Image (cartoon, rainbow, N blue to C red; front, side, top):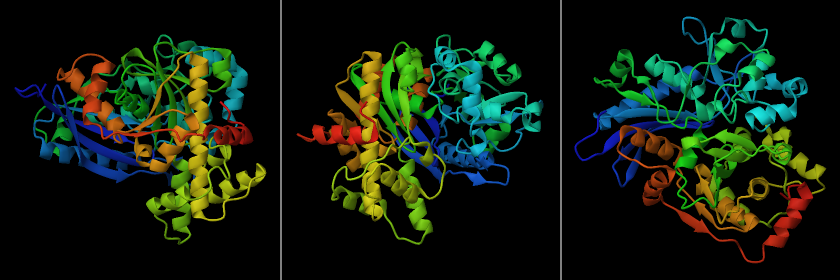
Length: 496
């Protein structure tokens, strides 16, 4: 453990998102944490003739670039932790080699698979065992879609994306539990692989290796990796909340437990932090997930499509030759009439890439509303619709769990979106505290620092450190806005 005499340490938080990645250098002492960016890079799908893929080798190369910068700035780097998005994985052969690039969760290979699996295993049983929201791209359905392929036949181990990169860094294979809980293959109560379910799904048991908990050691950098990044000492890799939302929730700057969180990026993960899963029939019908959190907590949440609709719309306009800047579009959208047209962001029509503004326009027409006439109107429709989805999820989470909340914390990139944050406060009728933006990297680093002994205590103590370093802004609900939001919710069936 490389900790200096003052009780501080420097750690690297590798945070891989579905649209971008970053390596953040965190300098931590007992009272504060300071994040600086070592390296940031774009991430996105690669279309090949067979499927939509992730470029895993590029992600690894970019990670090494970031770690090289981190070591150059802090030659006493004490630990590395990795988190990423959920459900996607790499398959390794008997020699530990990757069997092709991981398939992207937005690929169409799982079309219709979830219906077949649910019919065979039973929706109630799946939820009782795994507590997970039915999403068509869950790892269970991806692996089922791969049955009978030469790749799966040759595979000896499945590693989710952060575990795959950790394996390449250390040569030690393992599966971290917060991300494993998103696969629909983990027992929600025991937090072990659901062996009977795996067998009945026809999946090879050999794919599922030892599980790690946040804070567990995950190995040390291989000598050749250390040489590549300029580290001449054995740098440990520490398991963190390797699902990015698990790390983000660690850094939510809340006091007490009466809060809802929205980890807002490409997806909005909207929910509550609980001590026990909610496995009722009503929770299953509402499609809520019980995902594993740090320190044995439960992230009780619903996945909302999130800023993906906005990202894809910007990409479509720019591909068509339009000059569009997000800040200008949001400023113009704020001047447009509120709730003129809203859609359900979770409509499966919005899941694949391509042609997003046209798909939004078609959805508006189907709901008997005017199609947005220009980019600013599309942006207003998107942010209104996301705020409405946030409202429904926050309200249902409270009702289904029996936990009331007093405040909504928005963390991640969406915390920068002032219009979305204000509309979320209006829609929910609750104050919204926005920030920190880099909550995922912050939570990743906090867990590493605690594992090193620089910090101690539970989540409350880690969140106190986050509060001291977070640039936070509070948005209050606009008086008299409730009736308009209720009317809009009724229009799209998202009353909550």
